[in-house]
Length: 378
Ligand code: COS
Image: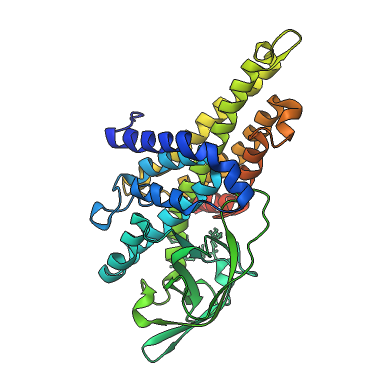
């Protein structure tokens, strides 16, 4: 068992950390207020390799592996959680096209995602009536001559209004998970309508939109993988995605804890810094301990992925634990700030709000428990 990071992993982490400290931590409140991430930031991140951390260098990626990706995600999320989720979904989309795409699909899309030519990628699986149960989706793709016609509605699509390419799931066969296929649809495609942004509790800089596919016509070669193979592609992509969201939760909670620690050293009550009080020390100590446990689970899942070993259960455990921990940790960090923590003067309340979604997206905590329990009972 080796807990040491490689040179590459340290370099990716340090690059992300420096950018998070220099740029993102200063701009996160503004992105939230504007409900928009500066596109230049996304392009800069791409130029540093952060939009294709686990993508081959030949396709413009950093080819640095899943552990590097998780470390980078932790740092970026500590700077700005909304930027982090944009990065997470873009990396996931690049990885899924790289893993399942034809050479032509990889050449066309993966490098554009990794290079920042596309600001983002989107993952269009969920629907108004199909969230935890993608097997019940209603969007269809019908073969007409040498094209597929996609019709239906998608919901909760991260970056759906800025994505250069989206991975879209649709039913091409019978009922259930076996009838699903997966397609690559370019942003701005004719018949693709982007709805109003959701008014969310947190990660407000990141856009979340509904999409309508009104007979969107794509060529036969827009099919990703094999017909009827869509559900497995979604599950495998989400296994990797869950490492990213676990890492995002760790990053948000770590930033909240760092800030609470500084605040406790600074803030005086009863004639001394509140850091002198055991009540505060215990909150900080619990935060760091729980954070380290989360981090180890996330990095273990990532290192299994790098070793090309099964990691689906480990990713589910990492996301479940890291997201629920982040909610507790950010709440304690806010508590350390007292009344100030409840105002927008400090980032503590934003960290709490931003962390909450990690228990929901890319599979709720309840879905993670299903994945874990099934693997135990198999
Ligand atoms: N990797 C590869 N294949 C997988 C897989 C994985 N992680 N998980 C399931 N599969 C395969 C199964 O092996 C099965 O294949 P066969 O039909 O060849 O046996 C097939 O997929 C269907 O699996 P299963 O019967 O377990 O599907 P269920 O409908 O019961 O769903 C859960 C399983 C609940 C785990 C799945 O629906 C899920 O993850 N839901 C949450 C989706 C989600 O995260 N939504 C958020 C949207 S993205 S923000």
